Image (tube, rainbow, N blue to C red; front, side, top):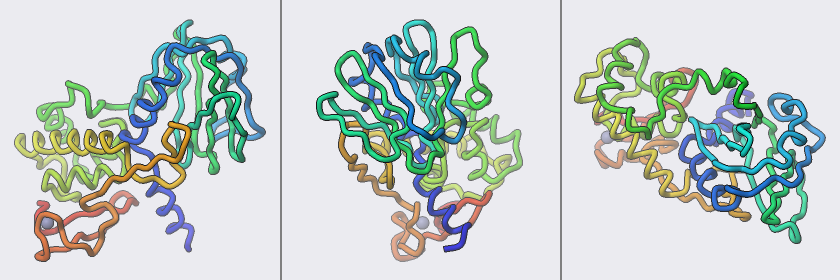
Length: 288
Ligand SMILES: [Zn+2]
């Protein structure tokens, strides 16, 4: 495998909004309202260094609320701290009752909670990242520059039409731009454009109001269906229920190169092109 192919292979498994949301929903009943009684770091850092005094500042904190922004998980604690996690390429949370917890290779953070659980953050490739800040601190730049949440009520066809008309980029590039819309990655960009019958290379500024509305709805449907299905099948990506998650989710076009288009049948096959360095899957016949 060349480095580029290997990189593409890795990218295929990046968690996107639905996977992060699935993890959030899995963690809420385990952790919300419970206090961190102890925390330990492993020997390695993640993509970025551990926050200063990270485990000391987590200890004694009640995890009050678990939210999500784009692909980031955000734990808000009782004294107004925020613990942010990005799963990177291979990050996953696992939990076990204290009595049955066994550490495994690549556990980089272990957190003990007042309800007698052990939460481990496991990340073989260490592309994940964590941050911790107090409410008086500024937001980390990565969070401050995130764009619209696609499942929020303000993500409308009119808003998308305005955002698209101000740019001259392929629609695929627009959807991947985290400063415009937060949380969509390679998988759900291809799936949304297919659903909306829009060509990934179509210039964003040519999008009509009707098409913008169709794309908005397609994005929301695709994300909501994936969340309902428990996220996509991701290698190294575990459901935080303590065991291996079974994210069975089928895609219409993503990695379906050469297969018949689900809409056109045998009349057309799914094609693969590269847009902004990322594999893009579409049907030439029904996406314009
Ligand atoms: Zn088609």
